[in-house]
Length: 149
Image (cartoon, rainbow, N blue to C red):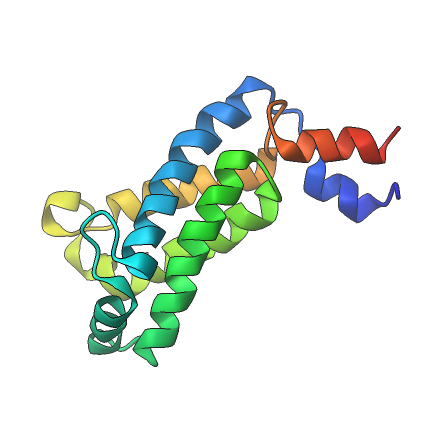
């Protein structure tokens, strides 16, 4: 099964840098998603997050909370493991764009004013991960090697 698409998904020459970027970003995103989905780490869970999302115009709020929470939680876990790294990074990068433009853009750059600097930083790192892939120390790399024996 040596197809061009599977190679593009799993192949990476990122080396150790892939792990250095993936692991902390994956943990941070999984924790943020867990706040939305499960009310862990001081989060509001699906009901609270859904009500807040509806209040800012992201409707239906509950569905938007499920989508955002799932993108962050499952995408974060995928990034941490280096499993389907590129697709996970693209999905979560898209979620960050939505957060930037629906919540933070009107507050300016700085986080102290609820600005978009944090969301933008995550977005840029996720784009870099999507471009470079999971790196040498990823499940993607193991899959790639197995497919190309």
